[in-house]
Amino acid sequence: MYMTNMKKCNYVISVVAALLGGGILLAAAKLGIGFKAKGGIRAGTWPAIMGGILLAAAVCLLCMTVFNRKKYEEMEVALALPANMRVYILMGIFAVYCIIAETAGMYLSAAVLIPTVMTVVGERNGKKMAAVTAGTLLGIFVIFGLILGTRLPEPIWI
Image (cartoon, rainbow, N blue to C red):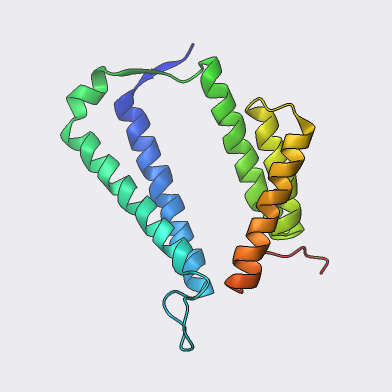
């Protein structure tokens, strides 16, 4: 079992979270951030807020680790625990989802993502997975498509 200390983990997580938050901010800027002239907000506003929060959290974690470095050096972390493997699998699934969403579109990729995640976390009831998937997709369509009028990623063949 691979062991490391919390200080190293916090540094890695800080860098990854800062890069991800910065990437989200850059991508959100391309969608437009702020209020529309006719009311409402631009498509990139909420992602920009999320990216900013993630970036701020990364800076906070980095500062906390620097100021408490001795404490975190003594804390051991086991990275290869069976419980962590499920988390690593889910991280991989979400990374693939982000790539697929750009090519297959939001609805199709979410229709694959939701039951896949439910299966990984232990759900085996097909009816429940179908109901949750359908309900989530309907909610996304109603909230983002109809109410907010947000353009979501579409399949490349449309």
